[in-house]
Image 1: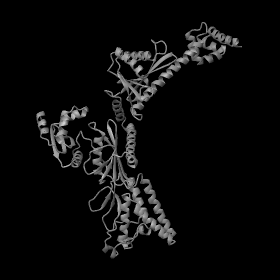
Image 2 (image 1 turned 135 degrees about the vertical axis):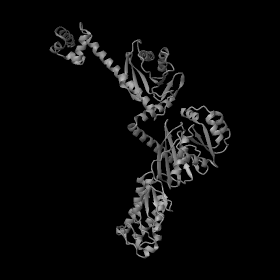
Image 3 (image 1 turned 90 degrees about the vertical axis):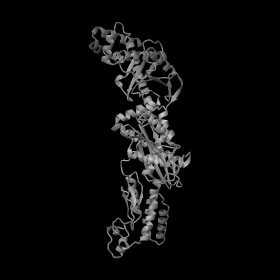
Image 4 (image 1 turned 180 degrees about the horizontal axis):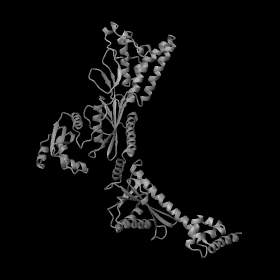
Length: 602
């Protein structure tokens, strides 16, 4: 379809809320979106310059536009969500739901049974859930079984069947797990009282049950029936223990959904908590893969609509960390302090822990994806044009200007490539001049890489502030590499990162992986440089003592050090041992030199 035709379609769109669908040349839906104003939103795709590459590709593929006008923004949200699930367009974020969640069912029948199920049948039964954990449902069922004597049989306990004596009590009755309604030993009204209390417990309201059991316990105690009172006390303890485990905040916070999200370059991690009477009764966290560089706001809105639909939530209020547009019928609260703020922080913590767990699993199962994610994050955090797959870091080491050396460490895909590490003896600089030493080393490193036709790094890190960075830049200028390789300087405090021609440093988040890898690089360069410097100084000190011996050359000194390992051991060696190592004539000279010194000391 021609550009003119697309322009015509956009011009005829209404200024109303609704959902739009983009089709490609194969007439396949490639994107579904919602809008408060269809005309403005769709037109923005074709008039804006999109920074994200995938969005540019999407716009190029659009051949036909279809729209559906709705009455409200809420309708638009729900329709968008349903269309995405139905058509699974290539450029839409799709929240995976690859499992059926468990529900608690109170069966619609006389003397209702309570059980776990994954199938919701519209037969008038009550369903609570869905729960994100089977364990939660089982713990709840175990609690109900301990507190109340309910039937587990599937008999049809109609009034007629019971009066005709159709059924006999089973083992559950004799074990005191059931009160025998099948033989009319428990009234329907009494049984339904238990069901009412159970309904409250499932909803997180323990007050009625606690009051009832407390009264029963006191009644038994007054009648001197201490054994029965003890049984009720055990039930009270069970219920109180369950309640204390689930209560985390102010009990006045009731019937609220909490939603938060954290994200990196490629994925979002969203958490949902359902609060009832101060207790968390549901929790769910999911990973969302970004398709078009979606914002946290866009991802969270999508997550809220989908999760409330999936978990059948009727909560009139939600807590979120920032403003979201999710329709007119829900109260949106952004807590600033107190218990409400703490519950939002708890939700965020859940999302962070989930993200960490995912990283650990990805590292093991899919190392390539782990590397891609870290590289994308570093590119964003350090404002680079490309992913820093190959990074080199330089460090100078000199002590009072003696034996000036430098180190270059190499990281590939965020990990050390130790075989590529290099040491440098400073050749052209006299005395302790860090700036000139840095200039020399950077020049030597990249002149060599260029002459040998080797690949250049995407990022150079200089251990030092603006001074060292300027020195390194001089060498890159001479070699014609300025602007071709990204270069940054790290100040001593590590959080400060300097860029060429920018006096204001960048501050990285102290917990970010980018800072951790940058610290690792700097520490490696420092360690590698210091080790070389220390070895050089100690070697130099050893050699200088042996070099004082008249008529003993470098080769003899090397042989002695190989044999005796240190100047001290050479000094302590017997004449016979020295002869064995370097021959009679030279052994005598070495032995006499050290023993003359000893004689003089006496």
